[in-house]
Length: 202
Image (cartoon, rainbow, N blue to C red; front, side, top):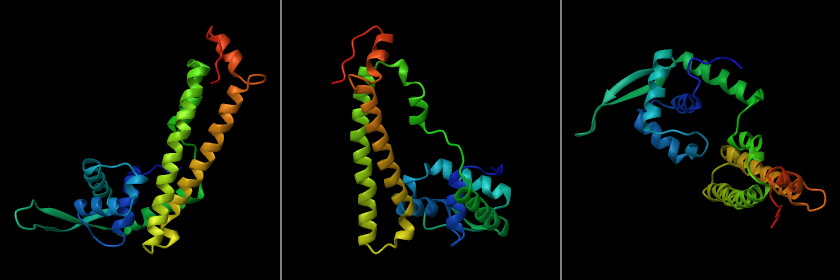
C-alpha cells in the first residue's frame, strides 16, 4: 500500500465532501454526521480540525475565505485543490481495488482467548451473539429508513456491507460455540483440563 502524506481515513472523507463544495470544519462535522459517516469513520471535532490542518499543510485543501456570523468565532472555509482531487481518486482506487491485512480487535482476542476458561468463553460468545443481533438490527434499520426516505441504494452500500459482515460473524461465532461445546468431540473438555477445571458447556 502507498504511504500517504495524511493517512487517516477521516482525511479521505474530508476530501470527498470538499470535492463537492467548500466548507468550514464545523459544517464538515455536521455533514459527516447527517450522512451517517460517523458509523464508518471515528472522529470528533478535535480530530477533524487536526486532519483539515494536515491536509492544508500537504497542499490537498486550501483556505477559500474566513467568515463570521454574529458573535460566533471566525470560521475558515476550505476547498479542495487539484492535488487533493488527485489524492482522493488515487486513494479510493487503492482501497476499493486492493485488499489489505487489517487488525480487528476480535481477531486479536481470538488468537489469545485460550487464556480464559472454556466455560467463560462460551458465556462471552453467547453474549456476543446477542450484541451482534442488535448491531445487525440497527444496520438493517438504517437501510430501511434511508430507502423509505428515497435514498438510492448506491449511497447505502457501506451499511449493506456491514449487514453482510455481521451475518458472517454471527455464523462464525455460532460454529465456534458448537466446536467448543460439543461434549463428545468439542474442544471444551481438553481446554478445561488445561485449566484444571471441569467443563460445563451450559
